Length: 500
Image 1 (cartoon, rainbow, N blue to C red):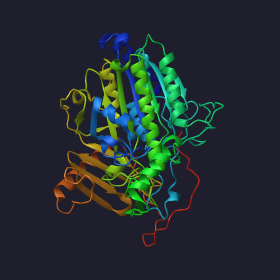
Image 2 (image 1 turned 60 degrees about the vertical axis):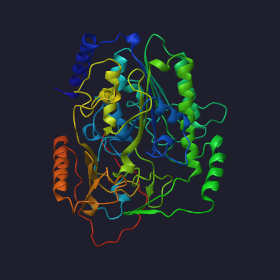
Image 3 (image 1 turned 120 degrees about the horizontal axis):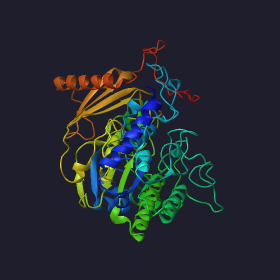
């Protein structure tokens, strides 16, 4: 049976099961607002520890809902995590393991491994959370960054009724000020900041929506992805704040294998971009209240990967106390600021320390919407409803990451697993395996493989078995690799060809 027939059969069974098993009529189902920020680090907002960035509206959301201290992205770069949110399936399972279209190995000088190719779009055979919600009476709206395919694989091809600004590009083609040069976001006469425009479009949807249907509003910001362009309404405040706090002092970068990490949050331009997101969250929150929707709207806040901290030179942000950032499998690259507010379910100001991951949103939203779980779809996610109620998950599972690509952050192919408090990272390029205890060492500074060989062997075996079960593509040795050649920064190369 081909995949199209399987999809048709799955949808048919879904519709039947929903009629039978759904406990809530359409008109009483909760609305859903999903805020997804691009490249926002775990420590980039106030309620997660930032002393430089100011995020009063996001902090208020955390105070009125549940904050997850150990919320993870399924990949340290954007497209794979976005696919995992949409499908409830691991990036390995959907064959999107790198950002689209990704880097060539030629950008890594003298690479030890050959290129690992993956898809350049989310296959239409994959069933998204938007499709399932739409089948069950939801109106679905998407605004912002898509980065899961071009024409034929856009949000409107994957279950969304509306698409404002979503296309194949991972960064805004015209920058953050109009003209945006975005075929799905027409320019207006006035000069606009991109985040403000996406917020206006989202507010318009809320005002003009079909009031007979519940809705999914998925606001996927381009902020705070490069290019780092300041939000003019906030930049003067943060420039003055940086001068007051730091004067003309500079921070020493942190060495990370072949890269350098920024060691202090002191970037006014980045801070202003974070503030633009916070202003947007505040505007949407106030609109929900004004329309009488707040008490029946689930709100989720998340980031697709860690903040850009490590490059051949220091990146624009700092994720301390977490190590490294975007592109890396250290905590700074995969641990995200995560908040869920579910009226009638979550208690205000609660904190959850259970490790969870981006594949979990799909089944969680189904249960919150009063819809039956569909484990044949969200194969790698579990519903977080017990945690939202203050209970425990019935399963104790390891979390795994597979990132066999070279990345501009100077990351080289590798994989990782977290099991309880223990975390193992394999760095294939350097022939190294590192072991950390996150409970005692959140910053991953004390490598423990020599003192805990049994735990090292246990986690290596679990990770290898998971990769085998998932049929993960492993990088193959590069026959031209010269182990004696010195490392040099790679030249810029054209982007690679990928699977269609």
